[in-house]
Each structure stands twice: as structure tokens, then as C-alpha cells.
Image (cartoon, rainbow, N blue to C red; front, side, top):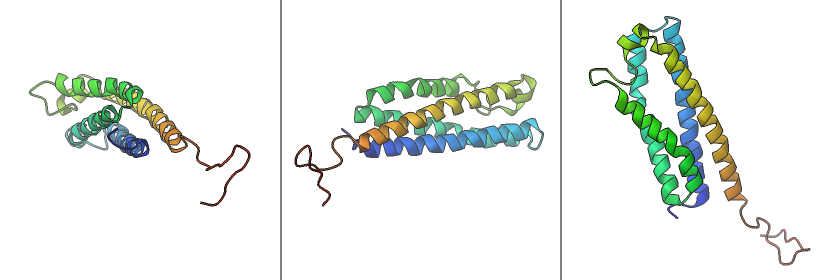
Length: 157
């Protein structure tokens, strides 16, 4: 084991929470672009700034789960890491990033990006609660009340 289970799952919850907040920021920024409160260049600059940190934090989380031996959690997180890596590499070389100000309006990618953000939000909400369940189960693993016999409960610590 790389870290204790509780520490691993605490870090997992922190990463999921940070990515959830970041995705809410993405949705708000894309909604501002849709309502013309922001211009496309400013919106894409703000969003592209956070693309690599989102991928990096999720990749480090995947590595942490792999080193900790939490195979099921690792396998649940691996498809999202692979998809984020694919999203980073599929962008054109002459574009400014995953969110390109030229393509976002001309190709109608604004709705696609909003849809993807909603899918990511759903995935990370589910994974947040799975991580919370794993944290709680790791905290109560074993016998939390020290007993000398089956009928006697010791309350002094």
C-alpha cells in the first residue's frame, strides 16, 4: 500500500470536489458565452487555462489509486483519463486549445461543449459518492468498538 486507505480516499474526494467546482465554472463560463456576456476569445482563454490541470489531477488520482491497489476505483477512473487524453490530443495543431474561439461559434461547438460538461458533471457526481462510500467503508473497517467479549462493550479508551 502506498498510502493508508483513508488518506487515499480523502485525497480522492478532494480531487473530485475540485473537479466538480471546476466543471461548474466551465458551465457558467459557457453559459455566459451563450448569452453574449463574454466574447469567444475571453471565454476560450479562461477554459483552456484549466484543461491541463483537470487532466493532470485526474491522471495523478488514477496513479494514486493504482499504487494503492484499489483496482475497481482505478478501473472506474481509467476511461475518463483516457477520454481527457484523447480530447487533448484530438485538437488541431493550429487551434488555441480544446476550446477554440473560431470554431466555437462557426461549427456550433458551444452546445457540444455544454453537453460534454453536463456529462462530466454527472460522471464526477457519481464518482464523488462512490469515493465517499469507499471513504466511509475504510473508516469503519474492522471493529470500531473495542470489545473483550461478544456481550461486553468497553467504553473506556
